[in-house]
Image 1: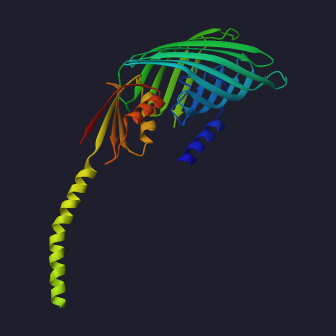
Image 2: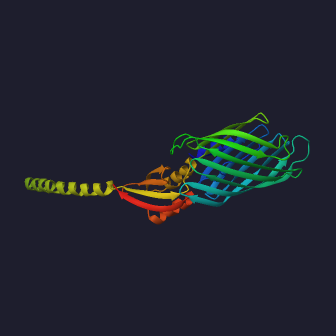
Image 3: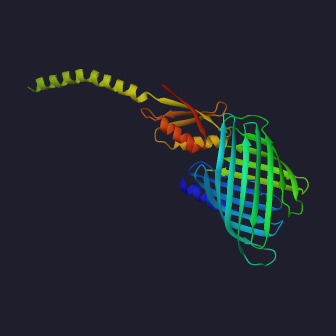
Amino acid sequence: MKSLQYAGVTLAIGLAIAAPAAEARPVSYPGGWTVMQMNNGDMASLHVHYSPTFTDSIGLYSERNWGEDWHFTGIQYNRLVKRWNTPNSQANLYFKAAAGQADPFSDGANVEAAGFVGVGTDWETRRWFVSYEGRAYDLGFDQDARQSARVGVAPYIGDYGDLHTWLMLQVENQPEAETPTTLTPLVRFFYDVQMLEIGYAPETEELMLNWIVRF
Amino acid sequence: MKLIKLALATTTIAFAAPIATAQDAATDTAISAQTMVNVKVNGMVCDFCARAVTKVFGKQEAVENVHVDLDNGEIHVTLKPGAALSDETVADLVKKSGYDLVAIERETA
């Protein structure tokens, strides 16, 4: 089983591309591994992390941003700062930070030490979902910031083990991007330990494809 | 003499067999008694949440099966025959899974 887990991580790293938008929950159960891969027309990212506790995770984060011509690779730490549990809902507040290096691959400049900090929050019932995430990057040769928010509804309520479907709307703001604000309708599927999101941003005519596996 | 020994052995076995059978039956009853622990929690609203619960409880030696009821926010834990899981351990496992414990009920089948 462990060899399968390591093979999965190795495969995921091998598939690494580079830069993401709104990540789903960045911590897992104690001893759990998570692979998150996110893509849209401007960026692609890979985040592979391990959770020693349900409040912490640490792992590799790699992001390639074609829109702004840089590639970041580093170690990311995620912390569940606070969770609110009620009989019918769950809400979370997360802190994220990463340190590593950034490569401005399009202008021939040197690789520089880089990092980012971010906060994320979400609220979810079995019918409704709302989330927000903001990040600020210091890339050495440049600074970048982005934020995104989502609202979602489940058209049906599935039980444990069923295929779960969500219809969501994401608004993302990247002040330095060619199209600073984009609206992306998307569909999220949950099944077993896998999550898949497919969306389309009409303003930029770009597809979004995100997936997460936990094991 | 050999005949007497054979008769004694046969008699002993004949009397011992029902006793042994009775003891086995009693042991079987004890072994087959299984406990179901029903745990009510707050915050368990999605499949990834439920997955955490099944992983954390499933690692316990005493646990045979874990079933999650998302509709009612309940975890149904079937213990192995003769095994035990204290309320303190259950509370700790719920906390480690990231949820808030509401109540624990037990049934013995």
